[in-house]
Image 1 (cartoon, rainbow, N blue to C red):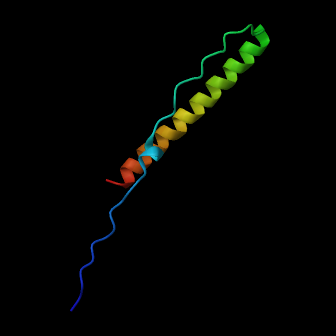
Image 2: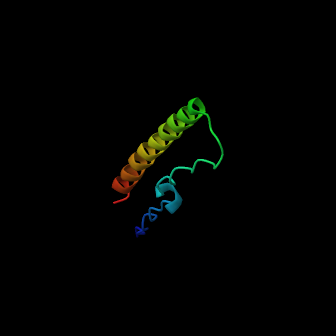
Image 3: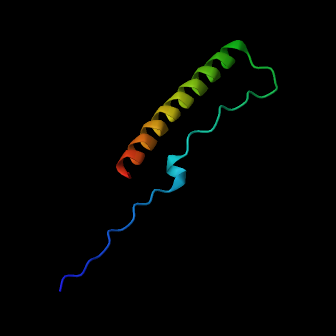
Length: 66
């Protein structure tokens, strides 16, 4: 007599689907223009990379778990 076993339910931890946090505020102190430009550019690069990576990851996981 064959036994019927239900396949395991798919589970993805909600933290994996979380989007990136917002950008970090600039401290309230004097920052020379060259330092400010460099920090701003690095912040935007990291933020953009994170958002694109997490968005693609979330879309893929949602598609695979439907």
